[in-house]
Every structure is written in structure tokens, then in C-alpha cells.
Length: 529
Image 1 (spheres, rainbow, N blue to C red):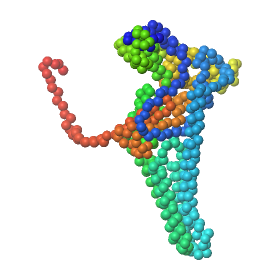
Image 2: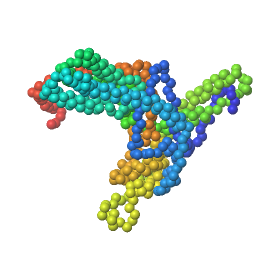
Image 3: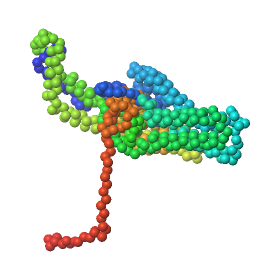
Image 4: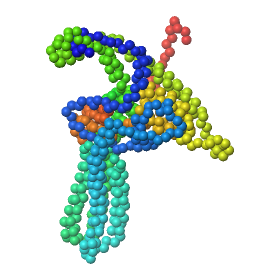
């Protein structure tokens, strides 16, 4: 093709619309990582979400993503062994996960070790206050009798309550790995450490050095320490749990690829903790991210540009170098695309109408096939099982027996709706066995495929983004403010979060006297009543 031109022509794609769909249907493109959004000069940190277990018990590996797309045509009731393979993208992703998980585990174990050490110091300090006088100067202590025994019981129960309260509040499974320290948690840990050190300092100076003989006073000193620790635990509940309950901000979360949007009301949280709450709600509220749905517009644009041809009418030396050639070609192609812009909406309209027609047709075929398949399953009672002359199957065998009759229709529907990469043959058979076990109807079985469900509905190898990157201009440990904007990025897409403050609402009261509800019927001569 010539390189330079003063005129560009457009070669219209001569194939019919249905032919283009069939050509797109024959393509078997798998996951492609979308181009990452360019970011400004911002602070970037990483949030690592804990691994989740597959809901349907799917223990398959990523190799199932490269399974044969023709499983609907070739499947049988009895399946054999299969070979798994990994793509280069999967290998890079797995190696990155392994490298990042090492630092994550070390940080997690370090935090747990420091928390356990601090907790043991706090719980053992009151006991040490009571035991050390008996070990160092037992002969000089004055007996306190019943008063000390009552205080011993009080200390024992208060320490038990404190132990259970600390375990319930601080030793919970982590929801996510935060990129920065939790300010309030670090503040409370520092306060407890300084508090215990000050008690030890006073104990060493006033009791150990002088070898105080008043044991009842020593016991009361230990009781006061336990009481103060209980009050600090109450302060921790207020700062860590109660402070964030009242909503102050409305956060709008938008997925960058398809524009899916959700709104959440949150309290006074830091940016990193708000990001964790958003990600926890993302997996249950947002529909699963489907990159295949985004390929239609890209393929349409590529098809339009592929029909443009540029001709050189002046010969190879008509312009000033390669830069002039490229610039001339760009102007020519843009001009041709602009001339065809007026008719492109018609093509888009008929293309969407044809796609909807094909979806409805495949849906009807799938519903009929599933209903016919379910009619062959009959749940037998215990009395019938003893008298039955045929072989009795368990739910797994029954699912494998009726699956081939619906597999082709299900495969065509998933291809048409571009969901084939979200469901493997093994996961469909497991879901079918689950529906048969619980005596569910064909409509209940089809609901998982006819409507796009939340992200958690699918296996973790289909959706899980373990590593999220938090991008924010403000510090991630600072609190939310009106107008705060931050991004949560993963490999394929990003979540754009904008913050709006909930407005202050002023209510006024207006009293209406019940006796004022009196009415008069007005009659006009033109109307008959």
C-alpha cells in the first residue's frame, strides 16, 4: 500500500451483519488485561485482600480457563482425565503473588507477635504485683485476711473478663492487609505500654525498694491497675467500633471499564479503612467484571479503521520524509471516518437488535432443554429404593447423566452472552448436582446463568484480584473529607471513589388541629349530583 496520499477512500465492509456475528462467535479469545489508566503524580500504596474459598467447592486450578470451548458438543456423562496448562500471563501473575505474599506474611506475623507479647505483659503484670512480695520478703508481710481474699477473687474475675474482651476485640481474623498502620490501634497500644511502664516504675520505687509490709495496699494497687485496663479497653471499643457507626459521608464507587456504580454511606474512617469497606462490598454488590463485553466496541472500531485504504498519488517522494507521510495518512483516515460517522449509528442499532434476538432465541432453547432434562430425574423415597429394579444414582451421577442433553444449548447461550469464560464444565455439573440434591426447579438452576450475578458467585480463579493498589493524593491514614477522591486499582480495571458529605437536615414541626378538617360541598347548576 502506498504511504502518502492527498485523498483517502473508505472500503465499506461488505459482509452482512449476521456474518460478522458468526465471525465473532468463532473467535475464542480469552482474558486480556485491559490497559491501565494513567495516573497523576499521586501516592500509591497496596492493599492485599485475604484469599477467599470458592463458593461451589471448585478445587480446579487456573488451567481450567484454557479448557476446550467445545465442551458442549463433546461432553459425555463420564469424564476422563484432563491436562492443565498455564499461559504466560498466569505465570507472571502467580510469580508476582508469591513475591508479594512473602512480605505480607512477615508483616502479619510480626504484628501478631507484638500483639501477643503486649497482651501477655498486660495480663501478667497484676499477677506479678501480687506474687513478688511473697517471693522477696515473705516474712515481713502483714496478713490481711478476708479483705485480701475478696480482692483476689475480684482480680481473678476482672482479669478473665479483660482476657475475653481483648480476645474478642483484637484477636479477630484480619480482613485485609493495610498499607499503613492503623492510627487509633497504634495509639491505644502506645497508651497501654506507657500505662503499664508507669505502674511498674511506681511499683519498683515505692514497693520493691522499700519492701512495703502492707500487703493489702499492694493488692489494692494491683486491683487499681486492672480497673484502669478495663477502662482503656472501653476506650478502644469507642474509638475502633462505635465512632464509625454513624454515617457522615456518601461514597460513590464507579468501575472504570463498564461504569457500574454503587453508593455506600460510611462514618468517620480513614481512607485506607474506607477502601477496605468498599472492597468488601464490591465482591457482593458489583456484577462480575466481564472483559469480553468490552470487546464489541473495540472490534467495531477496528473494523471501521480496517476498511480505510490510503493511496499515494504523488509517488514515494512527494512529501518531506516519514513524518509527513504518517501525518498525511492520519489526516486522511480521520477525515474518512468523520464522513462515515453519520451512518455508523444505523449499523450499531441493527447490530444490537440482532444480538438481542439471538440472545432471546438461545435463551428459549436453553430453557426448554433444561426443563426436558429435569423431567428425567425422579426423587425416590426410601420405600421405593428397596423395591426399585433400576439402578439408583446419587446426585453427582444424576447430574452427569442429564448434563449432555442440555450442554449444547447452555454452551451456545454462554457464548452468545459472552459468559463462557466464567463457567467451566466442572462448576456447571457441581451446580447441577447441588440443585438436584436440594430438589430445586429448572428455573432455580438457570438463574445463575440467565442473569449476571455478583462477583462472589463465581470461583476465585475467575474473579479474585488479590492485590489492590490504593492511589490517593492525600495520606491514606487521614480521615475522609468532602470531595476526597481516590482510586482502587487491580490488574484489569480500577474503582474510582468520590466522597460527598451527607448534608445536615433541619426538621421543623407544624401542628394541624384535627378540628380544622371541615369541608363544604359546592353545587353548580350545570352539573348534576
